[in-house]
Length: 161
Image 1 (cartoon, one colour):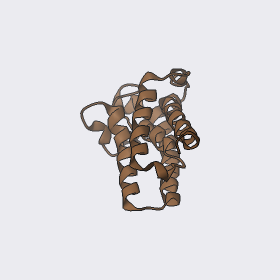
Image 2 (cartoon, rainbow, N blue to C red; image 1 turned 30 degrees about the vertical axis):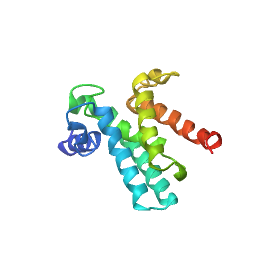
Image 3 (cartoon, helix red, strand yellow; image 1 turned 60 degrees about the vertical axis):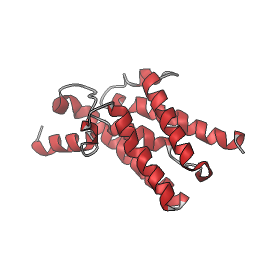
Image 4 (cartoon, rainbow, N blue to C red; image 1 turned 180 degrees about the horizontal axis):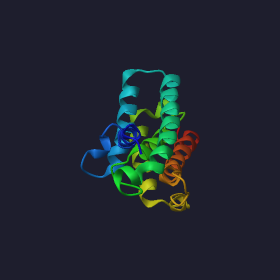
């Protein structure tokens, strides 16, 4: 592996070293999404721009997660190291797609807790997604954990007035 490739895996996998912050890597990686999302909402950004930002972020993070997943063991010495948080960024960003602004920041906080719950507990077959080979398993469980809160938040639009 070239030095450049190793550096790209390290930087993107840790999301510019956010994953190196001591503590629960998945929670810290999730904060790298939900924190800026809350700040964007407070900044008065349009709903269209907000959703575009998270759609692009989710796409880039999914692609980079697969790349990192294929190379993580060579760089970090293990298949799914705690400091690799790009997969959390992918799943958390996915949960924000088409976010209903009327739920405001409280909804973002709820998404954070829902995402972390589903990422940790991995119900509904999410755990099996980790076994997908060739770098996809590292991100697929987080995508599964992001899709459920995404669905729940959109279903809530019809339940909550």
